[in-house]
Length: 354
Image (tube, one colour):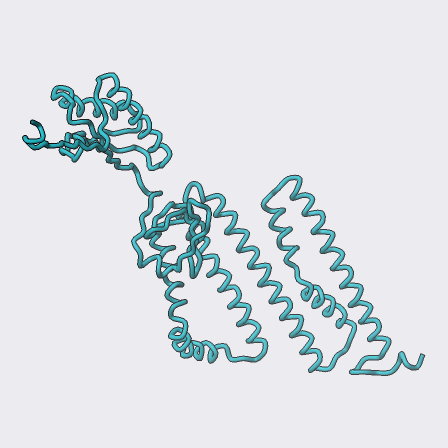
């Protein structure tokens, strides 16, 4: 038993064994409790999803192994009388583990709050949801900045001098990554000015689709054919963006051509007939209908009206109803639609005729 009384770093072997036992016991207990909480919270969330239950589950799932090790190490060292330098190293290790775990929990808490807010606001206020999503990154960046500064301060680094040095070095970094910074500031411009928000249907050049995500460097759009189109934010702001989600009504222009053999009295009645057909539609607001031009093979009429809804499907339903009614009325009135035709006149010589 003499070996148990030997002293290493100011503590006997027996004390080291007790400290190791405390470390293992605390680590095992914390690991067991973490798994137990995760299992019970997951079962409860599956039966009756509640925001608070899901939040606590997410935080417990975010508990890292190094944090449990740090807590067990801290408990184990309570029974030891360590010299100043080893004690300092242990305390720093525990502090860094706690700071990292705090950053992870804070990030998950911010993400949960943003996700909950965005889900609640997406239908009623998509612009606010877009703004909160973008500023979520700033909140996480601020959190990690505070964590890093606390860690450096505990290492004895002069934070004031460091911040001043970063200000000077930041100029060189900004020049090196100016394209990235351009996209970053463009994303802030999108968030603050709101030319479009998540859920808007936009057209950029030859590309069109629904905005799915507005990030710090890129904006992602889901096209009508299903693929995702990715734009850099700076390129997107330098383009002409057509936002159809903010359309209040849709202006529609279409034409109708009738044959040249149409009698004059029926030709004069066509404009009034087209007006009557358009005004009969619930969502249509008539603007004008005119005999526009003498075409190559048709007498051309032009109709302009407004659909009192930005929805494309409702516009197509209205246009279809108008087209069907025009076809029916023209059949009743004996008015023929024109289609491309050519008349070929053959001239014969008088000698051949004789």
